[in-house]
Length: 191
Ligand SMILES: [Zn+2]
Image 1 (tube, rainbow, N blue to C red):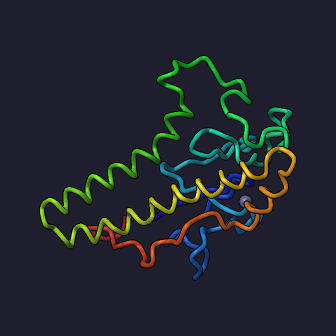
Image 2: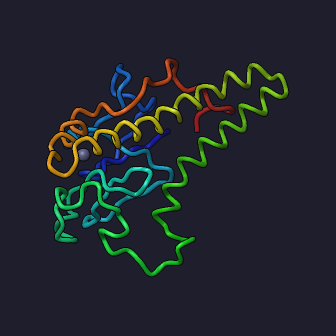
Image 3: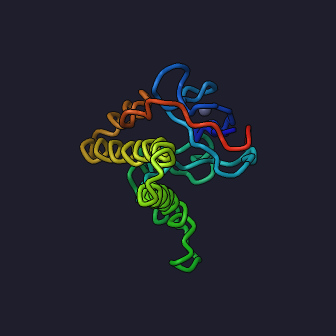
């Protein structure tokens, strides 16, 4: 069962198909209205004083959640588009073990693994398996495309027009077409 968390208000939620209602849009926060949620890869309960910082694949800051200003003194307008490691002075780790970098690599690695599985299925002439994996590939392509679109908006907005980015995020519309079918059922029943 996929769990999601709002980067703004930290509210956790469950969304079975990772879509907003019956639409093709990514789920938004029903608690504070923030435009998008993050899927939790591990179960996680934030502490009451935790503040989230949402980043793109390059580690550039897209949004600051509630509580970050109180923790850091920085407002979202100060940091939008800034490198997260430099902006918050995160250091003291070996460059190869940079936790921000490791998290950002995750999305790219997942895409590559799925592509390799599709190729293996094709090599084995396993067309059923290939079709099955196709759904995951479409999902992953959407995630990568979403960030690409968002980056383009940020680049266009520049530093003088941050409200344009806000408006884009508030509408919650980043993304390419979602996979046209729901996720295939998990082997062995419910997860
Ligand atoms: Zn929220």
